[in-house]
Every structure is written in structure tokens, then in C-alpha cells.
Length: 247
Image (cartoon, rainbow, N blue to C red; front, side, top):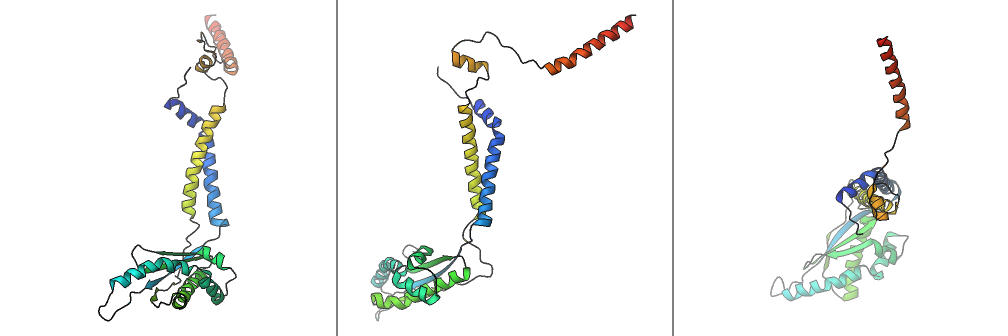
């Protein structure tokens, strides 16, 4: 026999396991908040910008071919910036207790499409150190690129600065808690339906018909003996009072 599930049954299942869903959601949200606020180390980010200049010619102020050449070289510059040739010198300048490979993981180099401005972002637990490393990478790259590629068309556009009240870029507790709330809610709902699916006890007449394939001829209601015992003295008392009035 084909089984169908109605929206009413789904609603009743959720209502039946509502406390379980709320508990799981609350635990997931609270755990995410505790981890984000108290266990994870705040990471700060600071960035600087360098400009790949267009070379001036004697005949015209801006040479289109030279600008296009500089744009094509930006991808090469992005790789050079994160290379050990640059990062090793930065580690030496800033007296960092790390390797070029580890520092590479903390540095992000990007640029807008068709833009000659390259953005160098550095993440660190110390906001001041993040700014110092970003500025050191920019200045070191400007010094070394003329030796590496025999070009002199890079200038520092904006230096990284330490703000008065720097805010960490991660973790983001509110976002983490929101994600945990959604995940916890989904997990709670999924667990509720799983428990309902695994529950093979017979609860209604419809369950009997589905299991045995036979119609239900009758049903015995549940009798509450406590209520019956309470009603008996009341009836006896009424009879006694009736006899007294009759006499």
C-alpha cells in the first residue's frame, strides 16, 4: 500500500519534537558564540597599494602601448610580491619569527580589472605588525623589482596605517552564530524526522490498518481510574443526601 505524508503530519511531527529542535539550535548557537568570542584569536588586516606607472615618452604624455604592457605585467608582479625573494627580505627587515611559506599564507595580492593599482593585504594577530609587514612588502618590492625585471615603474600609492580602534576581520561572531543557528535548526528538524521515521510503534487506528491491511472494527478508549475513583464518593454522597431529604 502506498504511503502518503500530509502537511498536517509533518506539522505534528515538528510540534512533537519542538523542544528537541529548540535545544539543538540553542546549543549550536551558544557553542559558536563561545568559540568565536573566547577561543578564537582575533585576526587583523592591513593593506597598502602600489601603482604600476605608465612611462612618459617624449612625444606624448601617455603611451597606450606602454600602459597595456604595464597591465600585462601586473600578474607577474603579483607573483613576485609573494615570492621568497621578497618575503625573505621582509622577514629579515621586520625580524619575524616565521618562514616565507608561512608569511605567504598571510599575504593577499589583488588588483581591479584593467587597473594599474595593486593592493597588498596582510593579516596578523597584531594590527600594528600587520601594517608594518604590508608597508615593508611594498617598499621591498619597489626596491627589488628594478633588479629582478630591470624596470623602474612601480611607486607606493598608499601606505598601510594603524587606525585608532582597529577591528578584526575574523572571526565574525555574529555571522558565525547566525550560521550555527541555521545549521542547528536544520539538524534539529532532520533529527526530529529521523526519530519519527525510526519510531515503529503503533499509535493510531490508521497505523493498524497500514501494518495489518485489515479494517478496524472497534476501539477501546483509555479509562482513567483516578477520575473514576473520585466520581464514586460524589455519587454516594448525592444518594445519601437524597434519602435524608425524602425522610
